[in-house]
Image (cartoon, rainbow, N blue to C red):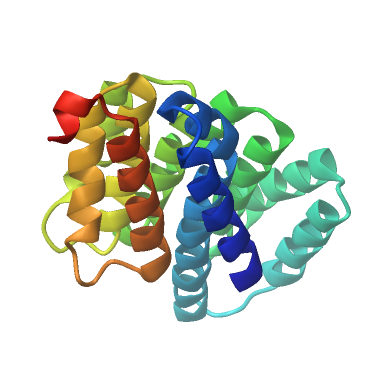
Length: 226
């Protein structure tokens, strides 16, 4: 992973010397979004385990693991069907975990709109713990960067981008990416600076924010740099 990060940073630095910001965005957008999503998914896995543990293991554990194995075997449709059955018939934490995983599989399958809708439904379900609802909002927002307006992305996560919210820097990152895509350089810069100035920002998010700040500065007209 460290080697991949080093390669990514090196390639971005080389790109900065020769291309404008639009080229950087087109070339590295998948890596930026994928890397950010992994952070959110890692948090989801940990919080999901806590939620599962508090509700005790059940007979549905085997069904959940079987669905995950189907996904690993690239049997996506079968995995989604198994997860939907678990969502309907399961108990304890398994239904919500099944919903989250099924939404992720939809995005991997290329159905971004379906995945966004599924994550938004999780986020709107008051019966689900707040931390998982926030994670669902974040996952929806990352998927929306390519297909929605800045205002639509902000409606999902801007309330999480301030104060001491645990996901504030992920929220700032996705807002910065959405602003960058919309061509609002000033707003994108502000969000990335908020990450850079947060001493508690995770290193990988802070590193990406600094790379993108450097990209914005190097691509700005001379008058904007002064």
